[in-house]
Every structure is written in C-alpha cells, then in structure tokens.
Length: 336
Ligand code: NAD
Ligand code: UDP
Image (cartoon, rainbow, N blue to C red):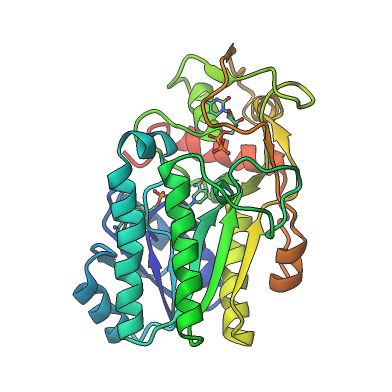
C-alpha cells in the first residue's frame, strides 16, 4: 500500500518512513528539501535495505501532487511538511502562513481531486497555548502564542471543516509533545540548521563541542527545580504512533485527535543530567532570563492515544539521550 509522506526527508518523517517500511507499507517521500538534506535518502536505504521512493517538489504544487497521488494510487497521506521554528514565525509570519496553511490547503485540494481522503496530520502541543493544568487532555481549550502555533490551529480547524463538509475524509490529528532522540543506528537524527531552538539538539551540540554552554531559560518557574518542564518523546515511539494511527484509520474509518507524548514531564536540568550520563561529557550551562512565550510545564495525558491507537510510548529519557548522542557524536555536523 503506497503512502505519501510529505516532508518525509525531515526529522520525524525519516524515522516514520522506516517504521512504515517495517510495518509492510510502501512509503513515498515528497520533499522540497527546504529544511533537510538529500543525504538522508542514502541513510534510509542503508537502514531499510531497499531503494527509497522520493519525489522532489512542493506540497503547494497542486498539479504535481495530483499526478503523484494518481500515478502511485496512494492510499493515504502523512503530512509532515511545513516550517516549525517558533522564533522565525514571529519574525516572518507570512512565510509560515504561506507554507503551512496555504501549502496544506493546496495539498488537500490535490487529495480531494484524486479522492485520496485519508490523512495523518502533524499537529503539536503548541495548540494548547498556556494550559490551565497538567496533564493535558485533548478536550482542553486551544490557543496560540505565535504564528507557528496559529498555523497548526488553523489547519486543525480546516481539517474539521473538511470532514464536516464531506464524511469520506478520514483524518488523524496527532498532537506531538517534544520529539527527541534518533534512530538507534546513529545514521539519522535531528539536524537543525543554524543555532538550534530546541533544548535537546542544543545540549547535544554543547556535548560535542560545537557550542560552549547551554542557556537555561528561567530558573524561577513553579516547578520542582525552577526550570521548564516538558514531555519529551522518543522519535522512534512517535514514528510507531503514526503507523498505529494509519492502521486505525484504515481499520475503523473514524477520524481522531490524540496527544502523542509519554505523560511524564522532565525539567531542563533533568535533561542536562541525563545527557551528561549518556554522553560522559559535562554540559556547561548558565541561567538566563525566561524565553518569551514559554510555559512553565507541559505534559500529555496519554489515555486517549492508548485507547484509540493501542499505542503507548516505550522509551525513556535515558534512551532518548543515548540515541541522540550516538547520532550527534557520529555526525558532529549533521548531514553536512
Ligand atoms: P523538519 O523540518 O525536519 O521536516 C519537515 C520537512 O518538510 C523538511 O524535510 C522540509 O524540507 C519539508 N518541507 C517543508 N516545506 C515543504 C513544502 N512546501 N513541500 C515539501 N516539503 C516541504 O521538521 P520535523 O521536526 O520533522 O517536523 C515535522 C512536522 O511535525 C512539522 O509539521 C512540524 O511542525 C511538526 N512538529 C514538529 C515538532 C518537533 O519538535 N520537531 C513538534 C510538534 C510538531
Ligand atoms: N530551553 C532552554 N535552553 C535552550 C532551549 C530550550 O532552557 O537553549 C528550555 C525551554 O525554556 C523549555 C525547554 O527547554 O523549558 C524545552 O524547550 P524546547 O524549545 O525544546 O521545547 P518547547 O518549549 O517548544 O516545548
């Protein structure tokens, strides 16, 4: 069964590609490589032992996407493609509304025109804005604090409207918490361009000597050690969540919206200590003021994902750090 993976050369898409092959699907990557390297394709071939099907192009190119969906008789789309840097979205909002919102609109037009109406969408815990409490259940009020988050919210609403207009649409909205880690082979992993915005890749770059120290943004939050708490989820578990979502949509045809997290929160200092243990390297850090828009703590209720997808994250913080370190130390400059 052919499945289109938009953004399949990126961090989460590439790990999901492998999980899909292992589950017996035939994934086809559609990527414009605006935030990934074509070198990932060779790595995927080494890991899976088979040729990778990949088309270079944009989700916004409706005739191109339509032709691709038809030619390979795609049964579903897993939609990862989009921009994801929060700070950049504040500085360049139109770039985000264009690629994420308009890009998705065009993708959906191509899918509708070819009657390929099964979609798994990469949403984010950012749609909960500043949650009133933790753990976060899927029925919490949604909000946004930046254009990136708003783009996810608008897409979620667009998908709801589409399903309302035509029940033949089957949609799984997956709200990821904090994806980290890498494939255990060390051949693929997260490769941010420029200075990493997220904690784990920044810590990994300090460990490997690319950055002198970590800024810890805020030590006066109402958390156990004063630093921000997040629900880090291993990208391998996340990849399996996509396989389960696809299987569930195909089996019972019911749309769903679920959190993908572990249900456990770790502070910034917990992550620093775990990474020191995994890497054997000291992680220098300095406390810095809070980062604008950050929330004190954010972690998922995992009950619904467990019930609907029969899926639970298996890997803990130590595996997340060990696998990140294996990837980072073997590829100090990422795919370069
Ligand atoms: P990524 O940047 O590594 O991957 C996205 C891929 O999409 C890249 O390969 C990029 O080249 C491609 N792309 C971008 N615009 C495109 C377009 N118009 N046409 C075709 N390809 C295009 O990001 P990721 O971390 O793998 O994230 C995947 C998805 O998950 C994104 O939608 C992101 O918003 C969402 N998400 C990510 C996180 C996270 O922390 N990584 C958290 C929550 C949600
Ligand atoms: N963080 C930090 N230094 C960094 C990057 C992140 O202290 O260089 C903190 C951040 O304030 C938050 C946590 O690490 O408390 C996770 O941040 P990340 O950007 O990875 O995820 P998000 O805040 O988007 O959930």
